[in-house]
Length: 100
Image 1 (cartoon, helix red, strand yellow):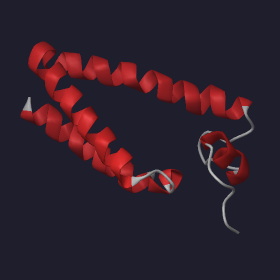
Image 2 (image 1 turned 180 degrees about the horizontal axis):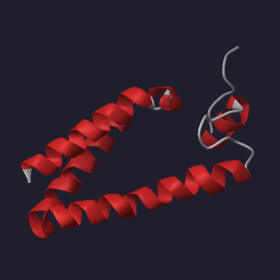
Image 3 (image 1 turned 60 degrees about the horizontal axis):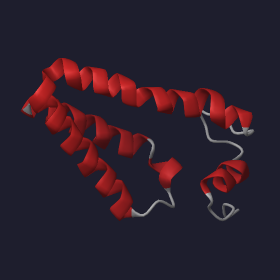
C-alpha cells in the first residue's frame, strides 16, 4: 500500500510541476485538496483491492481526461494539448481573459 501511495504522490507532484501553467488561476487550497483526495482514494483502493485495483482505478480515472483533451476541448475550439487559444481556454474555465 505504501508503494502505491508513494507512486501516486510522485505522479501528482510531477503533474503539478509540469502542468502548473494550465492551473494558474486555481486556488492553492483546491489543488492541495485534490492531491490529498487522490492519495486517500489510492490508499483505500490499495487496502481493499491491492495494486491491481489501483491500476484499474487509475485507468478508469484517465478516461475522462482523455475524453476532455481529445474530444471536448477541440469541439470548443481549444487545442487539447496546448490549451490555445488562451482566450477560449480561459472562457471555458470561467476565468477572466489572460493579461497581455
